[in-house]
Every structure is written in C-alpha cells, then in structure tokens.
Length: 353
Image (cartoon, rainbow, N blue to C red):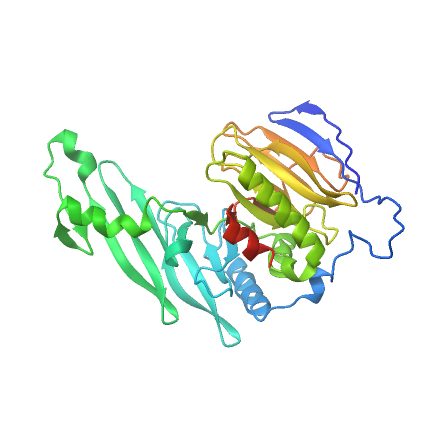
C-alpha cells in the first residue's frame, strides 16, 4: 500500500481539504506470505446477533419512531463480549436510547435510558446513564447490568444551580432528600471516570447498516497474528511516547479493501489530531489528519471518504481509496469513528486479541 497525499482546497459554504491517496498497489515481495493478506474476509465471520439486530434496525426504519436524526450503535454494554444494539430515535433532549440484547435467537428491548439520544457508558461499572444540566438544576440516573437486564442503581436531582436566586437548595438520591456529602458519595462510581458517549455512531443508510452488522466487529478474526502484533506495537508506542489526555482508538476499514486501519483519537480538545495507522509491506505507516469536534473522524461508506467537520460547519475530507473528493457531500451512510476504546494497555490487548 503506497500513500500519495494530494491536497486541495475548495470554497462552497464549507472548506474541503482533500488528501486522496493510499492506492492499493503493492510492492513486489519475494516471500510466499503476503503481509497485506488478511486471514479471512469479513463476510466469512458471522455472529449470532447479526440477523436479529438487523431485523430490529429495519423494523425501526419503517416505524413512526424513526426521524431524520435517528442513528444507532452496536457496542458491548454488559462486559460479556456480546454487543448490544442501541437505537437513538433522535437528538432531542428528551430522546432516550432503546437498548436491545440478544436473548436466544431474538433481540429484545431491555431498557430505555439517556438524553439527547445518547447514553453515558461507563466500562468500569458496566453502567449506562446520563446527567442533564438545566437552568438551575441537575438531574439524571445511572443503570447497572445484573441478571440479564439493566436496572436503576441511582437517580439524582439537585437545584444547586439556583443558589444565586435565593432558592432553598436540596439534593435527592433515588427520590430521597440527602446531604451534599451523601449526594456526592452516591455519584462517585459514575462520575470522574472514563465515560463514552454511545448511541449515535451509525446513520441508517443501507450501506452504513451493512457495515455495522457485517464489518464492525469482525477484525480480530480477519487480521493475522502478525498484523495484529504490528498494530499493537504501534499503539503501545503512541501510548508510551505521548503526553495524551482522553486518547482513544478504533479499528475501521477506511477503504473497504478488507484490511482495516486503526483510527487513533489523540484527545477531545479542539486542536487534537487524529492519527490513521495502516499496514504497508514495510510495516505500519501513519497519516495525521484534523479531528472532528468530538475528537474523531467520520467515514462515508458510500464514497469511501472520511472527513472531519468543525463547530462552524467547515469540512475537511480525505480518501485512502483514491475516491474523488472534489464535490464531496456526506451521504446517508456514515459512521463516527476513533473513540471506541480508551487508549491503554488493557484495551490494546482486548481489541487485537
């Protein structure tokens, strides 16, 4: 794989910075083993949850719950290495996520939770929930997974934000009045710990759904042991050599050639870069690009173009498949990527087992 970087700038309401490259031409090698050949193709890797989840997604798309801003995600929320399906009906403040779990041969709804169509997922606690700050008040809840379902571990409310207006301040945990100390103690396991916003990863376009179902969770079976070790070594090097805060990573096939790349989000700050790791006959190579406002990038499955948009709507885009980016507009099949795993030794090993 050979990277050719071509930059161009267009002005049409949004700025498009293009980097077209990474053609699939390979260097001649004398070895009988092709270092860029995957162990198997993604379509050869199957999971019991694929068809049930796809059935739920397709039924949701034709329901009256589906909106122009509906999205979904597939992620393990229970710590058993079997993912759940999270449907986000909209991004409205009152929109809760629908969480489905594979039970037998069906995907059944096990809880509704969240706000703005997202969940706060806390891996260390196998917990999900949300915290909402309104005008003068804060409220929310956290649910934990036990015995096959999620149940509320703690709900909370305080009007502490109204202190300046002379209001009588109170704190509630599970609808009971408590002291500030008890309020803070109850929330310690769920706040100031690594948390991931989930629920709004994939749009509902046909190709995005197909990627989520048939490609997103197969990479441990697709990559060879040698390829995984190369990626592990590079991720460990990045982790150990950089003073990174809130860094994360994700395995994504950005050119749909069945040999995935790794997207490394170096943080959540506006100037945090995203680093794209890809395999070459010489080992792991790297491309650095601008990040989205949430620290990662987005990938358009239809066009094989990945892109980043800032707070002002300006878009920068790149392709590792040689796609024409000159008139790029996101399609209905996109996914957000770069922040699936917190960048640490445990997750590097888990993602590339």
